[in-house]
Length: 491
Image (cartoon, rainbow, N blue to C red; front, side, top):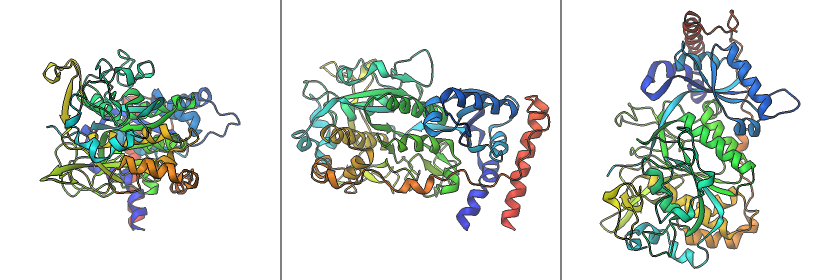
């Protein structure tokens, strides 16, 4: 009962505790309930989105066609010049046509500041990659989508393994191939797939692989849930086109006062985007656990700077439930000769992987990091560095298993222990492939996510005019509705 009350009080909780700095003003992500039309297409759902925006006093800022068509419901970002994002969210959540809505929260790279060089890559030895390479070093027909700050494809230790033609930028149209201008995504990419045995730099978990740079973080390592959703939409579209994407790496985090239970998650557009991709059962979704010494799926106990304002915040996407093919990853470090969870790392993840003093590729334009062999390298730490070890393992296992292997079968092979051992996972997948379940069951509980109360929703009386006075009135009325509903549930 307590969890249900928290879910019902979610709108009120946002209104009281969230800071405008946590999201972009006026932008709201909305998912409509499944269309009743006989024929579902991206174009028909786009029309539904436009019609819905018009009566809601907002405009469609972005429409996500692949997520909409695959999920069977219109998926969009709306913008209002007259309503605050929380006010508009509170109003729209009571609309009977809406299944999920939230402000456009900010996300951040999950990093902690701080082959000629292969000897410095302790992580590869720890996950038993050299033994695994005796069986497979990867396959150039296997793709990994790196949703991050992009990838510097001019780095000579990466260039042969980057699918530059498939790169995409959700931040700016000025760069459409996913070039990195921050460095974080390039570091992640090196762990997944720096070219091996080429007498340069380092070696990734895969010596041969095709990495797709999908830029969702800007030049300072920040983005929004809209940029991540846009990236998920792009990856879903590529999978629909037949691109063999077997892993998606998201080394990023955001903290929200949103409890990870059924009713809360199914009304969260970011979770809905993950669910659409998860349901394809093609790619393992690998996410960083976060770097604030908290616990995945549990509320924060303390504040941690601007990212975690205080107690009661949950780390996302690592705290998502109901996703059969997602793996959250904590960071391991070596301290006085003993490998253990890093002090900064969030606990409670699905698996641990090396994330301290990880040497990997960096921006070629950063002259201070260019080694004598012409490869730019840098050592970094964070759960951002741990996650790509797991994404790389997923791609390596996929390169060895039959093409019909599902994401869930690959995931099962990876999480056989609390810490990543790619050699053991590869052997386990090989020996047990035919007996591994092809599809998980956890997500089935989340398939019915459109049945909740909207009986107190009132349609705007003036047909959805976007005037400033009307917008203020709708925002206040939406907040009042939430407060009244909350009091009813508490009494």
